[in-house]
Amino acid sequence: MKIGVCLSLGLWLSGCASTQTGDIAAGSREPEDVRETLLPVDDLAEDLLMRQHITLAWPGGRESFDSVLQKRGRTLLLVGLGPMNAVGFSLTLDDAGITFENRSGRDMSFRPEHILADVQRVFYPWIETDSKCIDCERHEVRAGLEIRERIGPRYLEERSFRDIARPERGVIVVRYEGWTRDSLVPDRAILQNGWVGYELVVETTSIERLD
Figure 1 (spheres, helix red, strand yellow):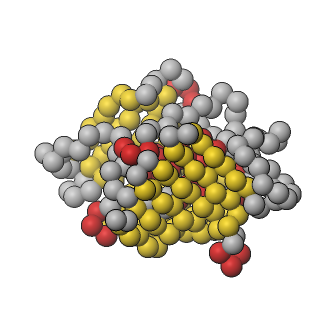
Figure 2 (cartoon, one colour):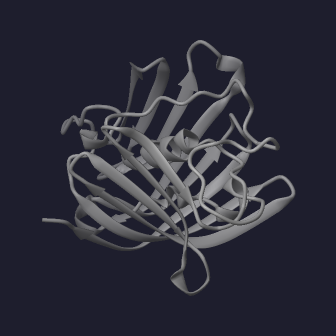
């Protein structure tokens, strides 16, 4: 699943040349007390490949770019694309952990696990599907998070996350628009991250199942 977590080559990256792995830059925009919980890769049952257009806005800035996300078996791969589809960075989550490769020549402004967490917040299942839940709301506590979902007449419309131990951090809210393509992913997802302070818009332009 080519998730839009490729989120923002401009916000997550910001400096000058060569390949690096996972180190966070000294001028990070991410608060030190923000720690992320990642789900197992194969919690997403389908093996998918997607192309997406990402727009990220934060106080004082805005960035747009294209990305590709692939989920195959127990590996999740995210690739951020630059001009002429050149690879800006790649981010992999598998049984060995997280691998980050930066070809953009810029320092990383957010931890790799933060980017992957946004991908999973948008696209992964967090609450077990209930076919009887139509025009309803449901909630569950998982990994220290209170998760709430609003289900419409056919599809998931909104999902939110609150840190039970730190409710003062605020809420992360994801809103979904246009569930088509066999209901695998929404055409558009809008994530408002109250923990860090930005809005992410993920528009999926193509998707395919992988054998």
